[in-house]
Length: 95
View 1: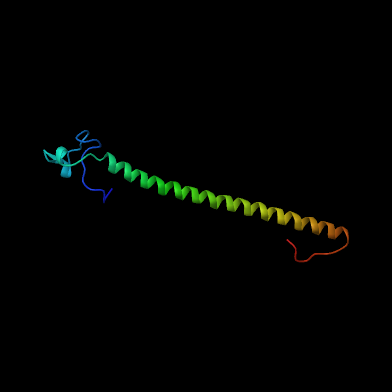
View 2 (view 1 turned 90 degrees about the horizontal axis):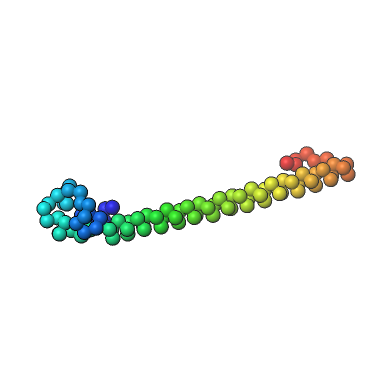
């Protein structure tokens, strides 16, 4: 959480870990609580995560539709080859 400034405790003066700048006796009155900073960081992080996951879902849908189109095209080609063979045609470069 670098870049979010100095704070001590989650809520003002409560649950303070006495280390670093918060070890001073007047740290709880000098520095504000970290609730707003932690919430802002979590919001930013979760928005990026959600956007990435949603983008990946779009890629999955595109891959699925492409696979369905490929399977359908191969089935159509094989169907036309079977019809052609019944009529006596030969196919050397098919599927």
